[in-house]
Length: 169
Image 1 (cartoon, helix red, strand yellow):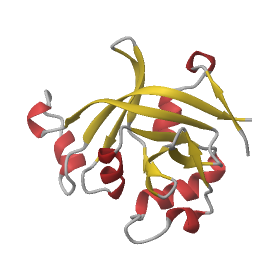
Image 2: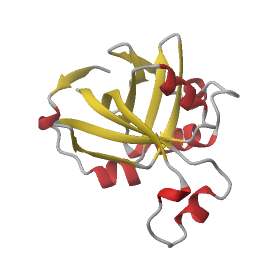
Image 3: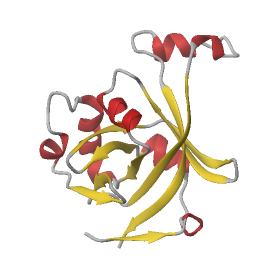
Image 4: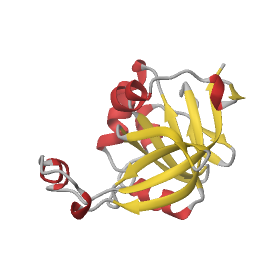
């Protein structure tokens, strides 16, 4: 499968569907050593005059280590036919298995980063800013901390410039 680099203004996508319903893979590392995870939380927008994506990763996730080490990582999007693969990548740790081998996804290089050849679209993300979510930051009392953080640690948020966009031909 081949990809072409496009200007971000040329893509027409609904972030609510792409991120929240179809999900995405966040992949850190390089072709020699990487890990990927499924995510269904994030934002797309403009900040500091840059096109950005905000991704959230819990520090107990294996991918967190890879994203922390590098300046860049990828976010990739897939068609419904890859739902089972994305579900696997979200429920198994790369510490315990080879997710690409288990799912049949094909690692591919994008500007020195890893995504997968089966993706419909790949963002190469350059980290600009990070912060940790905390209970004290919630401004409402509607149960979000109890619902989402009762058993797991709070996420680190990464605001990233979308440095490149690749779409499958």
